[in-house]
Length: 105
Image 1 (cartoon, rainbow, N blue to C red):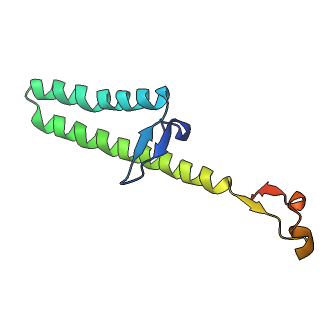
Image 2 (image 1 turned 120 degrees about the vertical axis):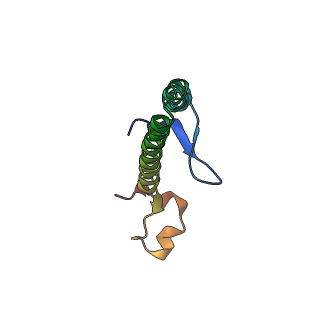
């Protein structure tokens, strides 16, 4: 994985990521450069087949990397769930000072 989950948030609609810091924007700009620059250089040299192969391979790598970031984000979100300890009696649970928040692990 080239990108880090801390640099992005998941899109509300659709599939993908939205950058939330400068590292995320740099990651996005770098991928645009990796996709476009070699593609255009190959097109200028009249190598249409090679340019399409490059575009498909680079897009596949980008999709794989975004998928890995989304999986890491989902895993981190599942690990940070807070819950209320239910081992106390019902009368003890009504006193809010007795509630403990713990991370499930």
